[in-house]
Length: 543
Image (tube, rainbow, N blue to C red; front, top):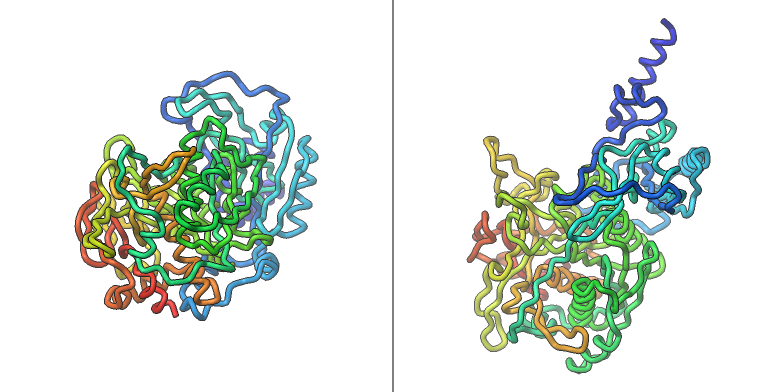
């Protein structure tokens, strides 16, 4: 009887400390506890293959709990301050307040060794521990069966069902990334055989970017495969009458600059991101973080960039994403928290909002937005189509031709407090529940009025919100240079005074067009957010 009472007390405490624990399952699996929100189904259309070989080497990243208070709440408080008065945390301050406990790392190492796994790398600031071992040991430790799946996007090793963790780690480990290696994100770019477009320099002038060059700033670009050729960059910037940019590469999980790989479209994405960001902010340093296109690779690339003590980027540009429904709830939560960390250390994250309209191209046509653009902690960048007369934009509308800008309400994240004053549409259904509205801002993305780039020795025109993101990243770098401090997490300020910003001309409002389910209108809308930038006026407002 005493034993039963103790067991009930233990289960109660476990439930309080880790709401994700299913206590019935805890009894059933003994020393393994299912990690809520990790269940996987095969990719749509994937064919199940043979089990992964027992001795196949596997690496996973464990995300540990933070030692401090709720990260997202602290980021919200930071974002509510005026950009000129924010006090961002230094890397050491962040680690002291929100890093992982050394004793938690020791516990993980001890449990891992007991399961035949070894610790390959520890980063307490990123709260990550990398474990390595044979597939057989890894599957036993996390109670999964890994198989090869065959899909039109390529074969991958993955699992179905939930991930389980040893009970000793239930309060410590928040996520396990790397057991499923399916392609996690798509590039958000469109290329057409047309000859009408603009260089990023011309678009920067049309959008009245501040007359500085970004010197002293660092822009991070997240890339999930492919690479760039130095000859393309040299030829492109020579044609612009500019010096080629200083570009550094950071390899995540062994992925490096690979311009000669079969990933043609990924290489085009990498090259275009560099050319757009560097042409619009020619004095800034660029750092490209190459990673595998998996949930683990994407996540670790972003956390590496945010917490890079060597390069210290002030803005991160992400041109990749996938519909919210294509992520596990657990990974969405982990990723969103990592983006909140960017807010605390003064890093602005610009994400493309998608190129397949309000449905993101999913079957049925119902509205869906992509992640990470739907995170409340990023500046989501939608797309427009520009009509230029002389040296000014005569007309700017929603991009909806040969692709369309993404946008709409999130199905995962609630409307942030700072977005409460704008009219975010409700989701389909009886209760019309509202979610975080996407996008926040916009810039040219229509491939018919696209960006002039150079790829594999040839000049071409490309479009998509994947170009709007580095364009906005370049603008943020220029503003940071003028302010002599990073604006960081700027969303709360933009929405708090958005009416004043619109009256001051900080944005060109987009009031014509639609992206499928949603139509442009005055003020914020679910196609182009607050609008495209007037850089100088926005800079004055941020001062």
